[in-house]
Amino acid sequence: MRATKARPVTSKAGKGAFQLNQDAVRISGVGTARQATRSDELRDHLEEMILDGRLAPGERLDEMELSRRFGLSRTPVREAIKSLLAIGLIETRGRQGTHVALLSIPAIIEMFDVMASLEGLCAKLAARRATPTERAAMRAVHEELVKAYEVGDPVTFYKINQQFHDLLYDAAHTHFIAEQAIQLRRRIGAYRLRATYQPGRMLGTLTEHVRIMDAIDAGDPDAAQKAASDHVQLLGDQLTDFISSLPQRIGVAQ
Image 1 (cartoon, rainbow, N blue to C red):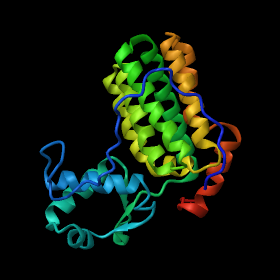
Image 2: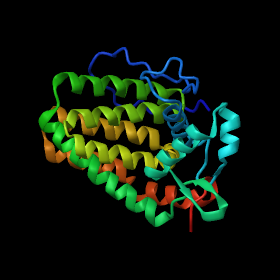
Image 3: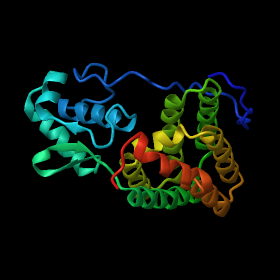
C-alpha cells in the first residue's frame, strides 16, 4: 500500500534520538529494564499481546497451555493472571475459564468518553506546567509518528502514539490523573489499536497532536483541554464507523 498521502504538519523542533524498542519481552528475564519476577515479565508480555491484538478480545487463556508455552511453572502463571484480572484486561467466566476481556459497545463508548476527559485534564495541566524539555520531547516523538504514517505502518504508529501520550501525562505533573488514564488506556488498548486502522485515522491523529502541542506551547489551558478531549473522542463519522466495525473485526459483547 503506497498510496500518495497528504504531508502532515510536523514539528519545528529538531528531530530527537527517540528510538522505539520493538523487541518482545523475554520471559527468561534477560535484558529487562528492571529486576522483575517471572510472573511480572509474563504479565507484561501477555498485556502487550492483548494490546497489540495477538490475543484477541474473548480469546481463552489456558493456564496449563501458558505454562508450556513460556516454560514456566503454574505459580508465576497464576500470579500473572491475577494481576491482569485486577486491571480488567481479562475476565473469568465460571467453568468456561479465563478469557481476554470482551467489552460491550456501550462500555467501549463510555470508556472513550472517560478517557477523553482524563486526557483533556492532562493537556490542560500540561499547558500550565510543561517544561521546555517536555515540550521538545513531545515534538520529537511526533516526528517519529510522521515517519510511521508515511510508510503506512499502523502497528508501529500505535506504539509510538502511546509514547506521545505518556509524555503528555508527564508534562501534566499529576500522578493520580495520569495513573487513572494509563489504567483505562490498558482496558481499551486492543480497541484503540483497531481504531488506528480506520481510514484517515493516522493522519487525523497527527493533525490533532499538532493542535494539542500548539496549545500547550502557547500556554492556553482551555484550548489544550479541548484539543486533547476531541482527539480521544473519535468524533462524528469516525466514531460511528469504528463502533460499527467492532463485532465483525475483533469481537464485541452485544
